[in-house]
Image 1 (tube, one colour):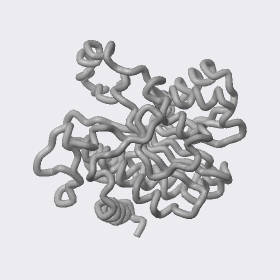
Image 2 (image 1 turned 120 degrees about the horizontal axis):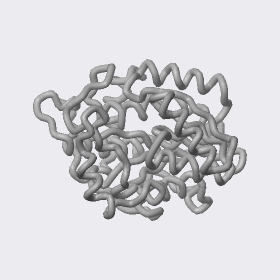
Image 3 (image 1 turned 90 degrees about the horizontal axis):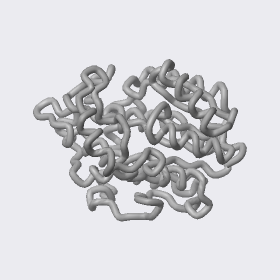
Image 4 (image 1 turned 60 degrees about the vertical axis):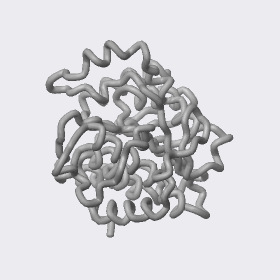
Length: 280
């Protein structure tokens, strides 16, 4: 990975931080993308200590804001002429219905639409790399998901599983359609189920709700590094270089639920997503 430029979203904690540290150890120049500069600075210092690398940079972006994403990608293009690996790791679990600054339900807005716009804005830089790679963090929760085209922001009825599963199915369908569109290029895109990982993703920062559950279940969870292994594999392994449009668990290709491989559904989601983020 020496000399390769890697971007990791949600790099300030959990799997994002673990991924950052491991790829930096392998010699990559890692751009840590964080929403909070304060938390990002702390994570940057931690990553430098743990990796022993100076090839780390911090940039801020709020994936819940289309304007922030556009501003961030414009700034990134001013600094870099290519991007070898994009790891779309950031994600939220919303215990109650919340909205992004653009009015999207937060899980479809951040987990899917934010990364959809980010990836499209960076695509030319990824194509400029000798062998660009995109890794999308999804989840086995996609099996319980449905794309609610009639009510994607879940205004009529909301629960956390419904919202999260919709966003994780969207990640897989996005991966599938993007792989189709990138056929014949040097860029690959794959999705990952990291397993049940001990992170703070389901903890409400304001109320602390969810902390007790985390403590009780922590012995059964994977560590962030264990959860990050497959994303690291897809970012760095020669064995994965030719694979695209696939879904991985434990560094092995696995079949998605049938709806996750529905080409018509993937194309429909892409068209809807373009419209929502203003790419049409």
